Amino acid sequence: MRALSRARTFLLLAALSSAACVEDRLVVEINTVVHGDGSCARHVVYQLERTSGDGAEPAPELSADQDPLRLLHRYPTGDAWTVQHEVKARSHMVTLDARFPSANDIGWDYWRAANSKAAPARNHFSFAMADDDANARYEYSETFIDPASPLQGLRLFSQLLGQKEDLLARQISEQLEGVPLRQKDVVKALHETVTVPFAAEVSRLASGPVFGPREKADLASILDRFEPLSQALAERLVALAAGIAAERAKKAIDAAFEADGDSLVAELEAAGLPFPSLNSEAHAIHFRVTLVMPAPIVRANTCAQGDTATWEFDGDDLYGRGFEMWAVAASR
Image 1: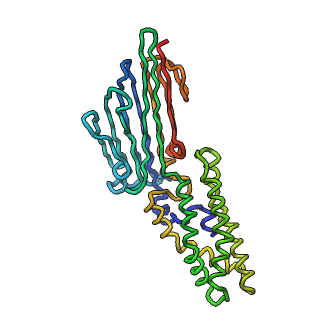
Image 2 (image 1 turned 135 degrees about the horizontal axis):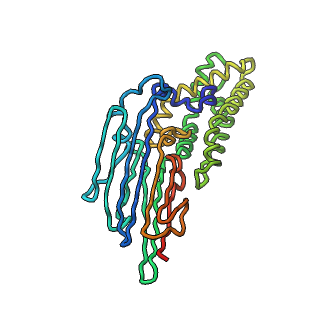
Image 3 (image 1 turned 180 degrees about the vertical axis):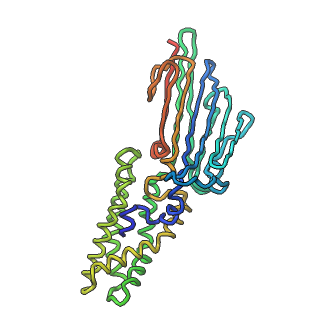
């Protein structure tokens, strides 16, 4: 599986080749102002820009059937919200404004799903306040979570490989026409040298509760480990059929896996899960969040100055337990 180990995306080669020189970058600017009575104002700007990756030629225009802000996102409705769209040839800006009695009433204003079957990435709010004559205390929390993690895609990818052992073994045998190999022996060899070891790797990586730096590094390299597994399968086939060249066995294995790539991609997409590599779309989303509280911020999980706290994070920070922002403000 030379193509898989080299690029880690053998299932997406066709899609990537057509979009290699186009970059869609989405910046989400969020500003929340909490007032002394607990009410809040919310201002959100989605800014999508399409550029040419190499800069040599102008990027193609952002058509409606390619625009993530039209296809993947939903926006809140209701009397409280004002939603405005500004669409240009290579950009799309969506502006949301609203006021609420409490941040808890916002519900959500970020919602992105890869397709109708995918669990959406979205935000959640939790706010409380206590006000008495001596002190006013405000606690604010907002969490962004994307359940369609590449780790979940990796888990399904591993399961699909197990389900397709018979098909893959048959395709390998077809590539090795004339070689005296029994189908059940090829299935067994595939199971023991590829499917089971890879499933063990996936279980180790995907069983953790977080998607942190270690998981990102492991995910970026786990498909590279297909190469030694496929080599082990080739060696097993050589042992089963004396006289077959190792290079021929390896080519047959690579061809069988690549031939089934389209169906694997389709099944992952049908489940609403990304291909098991770091999602380039997630990398292309950046969040800048500003929170202004009605009193000095005394604790927060970010840098805060006076009554203002700020956070910056990317789309792949939403995986696992998500990205949480919290701050506590007190008048005394």
